[in-house]
Length: 330
Image 1 (cartoon, rainbow, N blue to C red):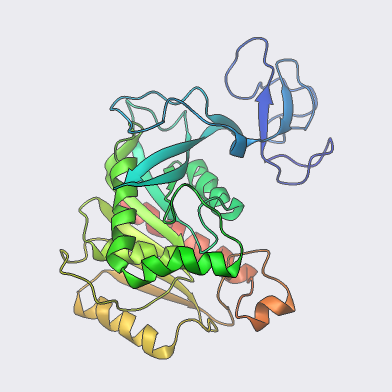
Image 2 (cartoon, rainbow, N blue to C red; image 1 turned 30 degrees about the vertical axis):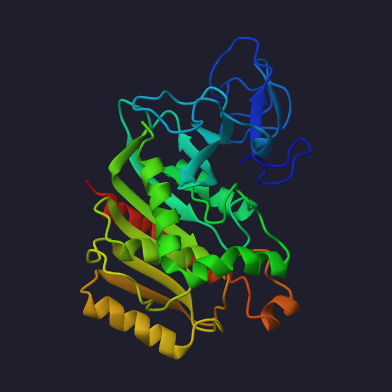
């Protein structure tokens, strides 16, 4: 993430292009400043320009991934201090439905000979092609995980209009087993990536995604070690018999979230207790729904029950970081 020294916005994600020497990563001899403060200008080995991740595709992660697959040559390389984080669009299936994931990892850390834990990221009602979700995927990759944004809607859709959101969400609300099936499809697919230690997976989710990862935990998969819900929908659904909870659970909740009633919260906590789950509920005072979304700052957002809260956002991310370190410990 580069400072604005040559006209790029603060925090812009950049890629190196036009390297004549074919070197990997970012050259240490950048003319304007040393790592990690990389300028938005030319260095002797390449040119910096704003990242164009959404327009790129990799052929080496297309379809079902084979064992020992090398990192994709077509993936986008992102600046992350001295790291080499690559991103990729990856297609997978749930039955007849085509789904699209956004995947990121540090190619110096995650390799076929040294796979690392994977973290799935479940999207909000906006859908998987959301810059907010993709920023979380990259942030997790910078932490040393392979991060994989699952797709609950199909074909990587981003939905904006309220009517379209309801059409996308309604089938999942009516049939929570469908939600679980699509989440498990992502688990199955990320487990096939050669750079992933498939025995050590976790999942995090926001809003609808929080509900998704909690339902994934209810499915009782052996390799899902923990799930984290950020301002997720907390309830106690009626589901077919699944194996008992095996994942640890962390729920981050704003006490002013109007979408979670006290009875919902009571039902959730009762379920956790009755099923003997290793669980945590962190309640952030004064925080509304969507407290992690920096764009939710207007009065109209607050009136609708949405409001960014810097303290809750920062604290919940730190709590998640510690939680993931705990559950992924070999």
